[in-house]
Image (cartoon, rainbow, N blue to C red; front, side, top):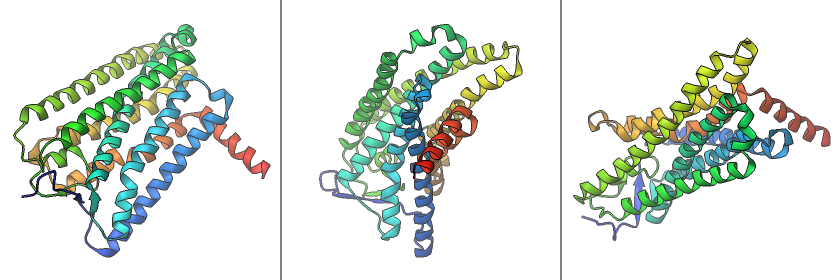
Length: 310
């Protein structure tokens, strides 16, 4: 039986063993990846270029786009390369790096989504105090806190996961290195440590969830009191994209990490992991740009400006 000190590489789960379908998977993932790069890249460029978008909401959206770019770049390129070259291999260091960066970016994104709900709460419920409560320095500090929270959380998870002895082979039942699948390879009986990590994770998720739900209850109350239909529509148009992103993110992540083992299967785990690790980074720019007229106008101005320039 190999232990973790003798493991130099892991074997990832392929989507298929058929060569034609492997190439189909490569092209499908390439399309999604390019869409994510284009969408998030356009959001970052537009917000940085247009002075009118230098507000707290768009500053946080820029950070979200950066996190989405990072998270999809952590998992998808390696999976594409394996499908293209008909391989399953990922090095031990590469697997540890993938776990660290994915958890770091995912943790930071959830923290940032929590901060973004506070931003919408202040904008709609306390508009007169918006400039005071969300000044440029406060926004930078909050964004830095989100990234730092993700970093520390990921450091804790990665260090604990890879300090466990691994003796149940080296085949990871996932298309990328995912903590639940690596824990299945552990021969350790340190259930208390694993339970402690689970409790910490659930506690952090629950606290952030409360800090997302409570502001939105106040937001919906305030919006429903707005007399004009146009005012209600404008308020909802800035909140609904954020709420849609949070719902997609939370539902898929919680299903992956909290589902009972009885309904677990490699094919189901594979599909759900694609839903929470690959789809959101490509979909988030579309969700935000479809409902946000200000962002669409700025994007059109940027495209027109570059077209006329050339």
